[in-house]
Length: 137
Image (cartoon, rainbow, N blue to C red):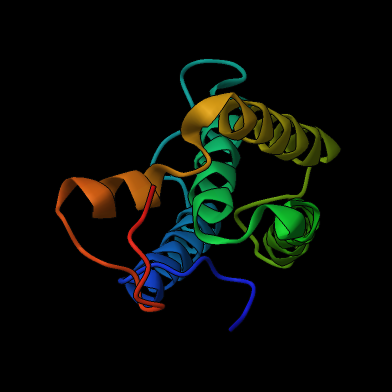
């Protein structure tokens, strides 16, 4: 996969990101045990989840594919809303998609501000060499 950065543990980073996507999906489709006590907290959770996912995947993929990451996450959020509309205990909301988009934007900005190479920094801290044999900066 040429779009993934040349990291020593790139498949682990990518796989963990897929696991995070699966966790978000499961949590989004589970029935709520009780009504949400704080109004709008679900929008904040959407925002946080998509901020995290954006930072995660922008740290794994090459910068030139950042727009694909953002578009993919936005589509993923749309699929979640569609699936929620098919359950008897959840429903789709346009504001959830707006919250997802805001989280993607925040994650993008935080990545540009310096968080983009988080996994490279971790690999450098633990002293591993990427698969292509070059030392990481």
